Image 1 (cartoon, rainbow, N blue to C red):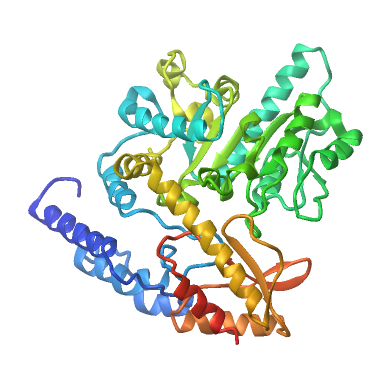
Image 2 (cartoon, one colour):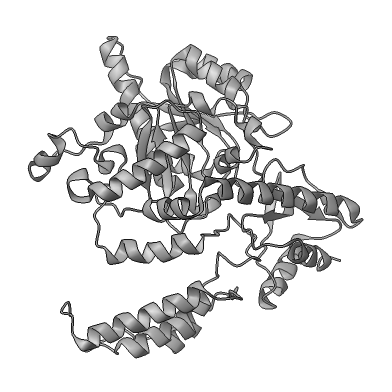
Length: 452
């Protein structure tokens, strides 16, 4: 099974040919889900005692399983947060797997860790973090937020102990009601409370609201979370004023920029993120708006030593790692075993240069503004709010939730685009998340035309 036989070479050749075809598709298929019954009929029984062979297995994937998965890199994939990895990043992802690199320690993956750290250093500089800042690429924003909050709580515990203060019966994290669901999920995993502060009329968390909430629960709050681009609207909190309050109370500030923080690279939107440079920790997901493949979240700490204290795992077989001064990525998040998931982004940045990233992100922001202008010109459509980044939320006047769902289903059935209804304040709305440089104005106008 592991030996390099002529059959093995043939399997590798077939898989690489398929991967190459998929990478260079001129017209990426949108595709759509199948029912469990359909998949059972077409692809059931593929796992057998003797195997079905590489040809049949690859054929099942290419002709049955893959078409039952939506292509998140399709220009018409406009729901949730799309993915638009560069071809360089996708191709190099194959190299990462083929190289059998363990990315958890410097001892085992020094070259990979060095390249990942170069990428993290570039991001940290873009976000105004000090030269000492550093971190790790983790699986996604949920793991990034959880790891950062675990670090924040550990730092609070150590500070309380050093000051001779009793820890509260229940710790709490403070965020806005618009914060990503992963914050509440992390709090649930950590068995801590979530305290929410109201947002202003622009949907932003501000320092005055945070201060008002802290007045009743300051002793228990170990972290404040500001959002740099909410998923539903792309709203950026007033991070600077939140940072002022966090600093005055000595509370950890975490910035969740999974989707939106990449827009700090665009000149037209950089000003929205004032205050990020003061964060104790932050995340941004390259698999969202930095054109990397799934799954990669950059988690950066202002003082990595604090994360090291919180996350380093102790075991006899790990002594050779934990007793060294090497930079071991697994010491900065909750995952011990890790893939070198930052390498595809490193390769793409090295190939294309950072300036092309700025241009691509700026292009998406400009496209969202053009779409918003077009919506204003159409009598049957109206904006829910002006877009800050690349998410446009609007309504079709006179439609019921059922109308929205029928329209969405038809759009996908016809393989034109994937746009699912969202909601805001109990109202069903539509939301276009624009990421891919391949998403043209013509395609977006076609989506709007279908709403007539």
